Image (tube, rainbow over all chains, first blue to last red; front, side, top):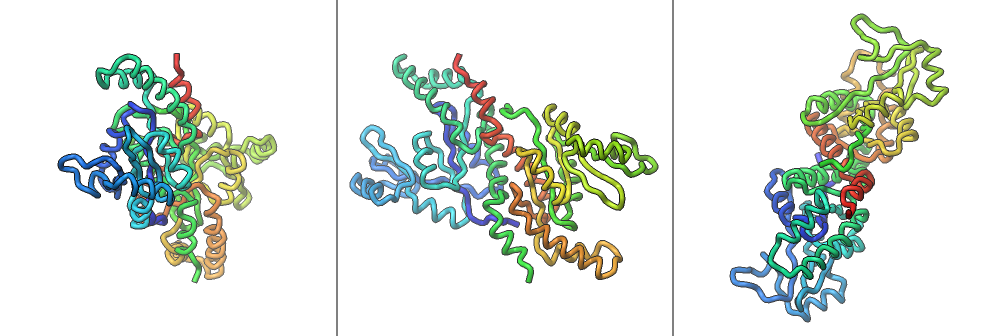
Length: 206
Length: 206
């Protein structure tokens, strides 16, 4: 029996290099949960095999900017001349259908969501140690040391933002982290703020 | 990796007849968790086979009253001339050891705990419907109708107190309810209020 039949917006964020994407993938492989991805909107051109509405909603720059102006983007960012973001309406529709919408975004994106969706669940994925995070950032590619240093400095600023989240989940193993997120989703659905209204209806003395 | 190495005080409460005891038993049968009972203190005489410090701490009325006066009881109540209650110190010791201490008490007891242990986790066990609760209360024994009616009225007052809890867990099946409590315990350990201090230590940049 569910006292909370709306879905939850689950925001998975954390510093670059922490493995947010891997945790999200593991989460979707777990059973017995009604998780859906949030499909992003972008102004970049579709690549071969990408389908509009599957990988992304592909729109023109004008349309994207109009969406921003009209407050229709839950969050967005600009990378190398292209816009990427999450349309508010599709998220809300999924939530109404009782789906848990998972949004895996960087800490800047999470800040934007925090302002618009007060009752979303904000989960900060933390590295097991700072050294580990630096190693992961360094081992990513063949960038010059200056690029890596800039990335490390950015990660430092990002790990300081954990206090703004509802939960901190250490990514010591991907399975542990995904398991914990599943527990968080179940617990959040039992929270009194989310359940009291339906509880009162259910127990109304006739 | 645990960012919160203290145990949690889990208060399981709810109206009479809802099946708190059954849920608690199912909880202890689940694996992979460090749950301990809180052993109560009482002024009633030990029954045959009862061992001091196992079923109860058996003390004199004088000693019990002295404990109350000195603020050493987390909660207590008087039933048919005997006192029953939870000693604060033994609970705190277990929490320091990282054990999750489970307290299954009535709503009056939970109110007392709420005043003393702000960071305990308060879980309200709810019946699937009010009719179901009445049926359970009626089927308990062979009491006269006046006793049953008094019990139903008490349950009505008790179900109104759910809003004071952190979580509402419907006891539709005992397994579901116990599963949800396990998820709540895991999620609570990841809460930012409980993890941020150790997170900062862990990620301190050397």
